Image 1 (tube, rainbow, N blue to C red):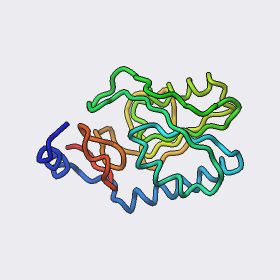
Image 2: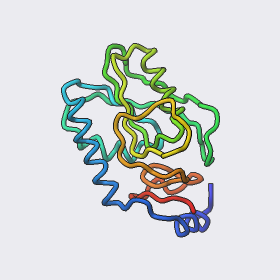
Image 3: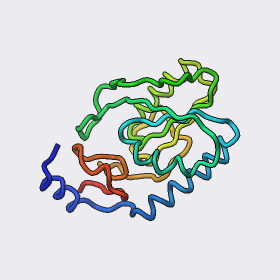
Image 4: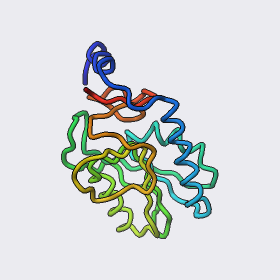
Amino acid sequence: MPNVAEARGLLNSADVLFTADQVSAAVEKMAEDITALLGNSYPLVLSVMGGAVVFTGQLLPRLAFPLDFDYVHVSRYGDKTRGGELVWRQAPKEDVRDRVVLVLDDILDEGETMAAIRDKVLAMGAKSFHSAVFANKLISKAKPIAADFVGIDVPDRYVFGYGMDVRGAWRNLPAIYALK
């Protein structure tokens, strides 16, 4: 974790990829698309802690249908900038059996975390699995899963803001930045 000066230095030297207004518009469009597909299914929505907190908090009030809510806590990053071993800290507490499940996450990077969540939820008996990610990273290798709903596509750079951190800092930014 950087100190305050280091964290500010990271932000000041970063490129703005998407402004707060662009982020908000992307979330609004996602809410419309999710409502159109899942609005009559009374889904169980699972938020992936902790990166999806900001995205989830902005998306849920825009979903115009009843839903149940829970969370999962799975991590491959910790405070590092590269993914490592998958660690399950919290599986869903709610019963997913025979439920339509929508998983929300901040970013689909290599797709390993979302694929593992999908596999676990389906193994637990979910009727169907859907995923919504605020950001989809455009990488050169194939991913084991594609998100059903995507807010924005980001280049293959280290991005942060709007729930995504850089060395533990700046999850609270309303815009999306990329390290140089």
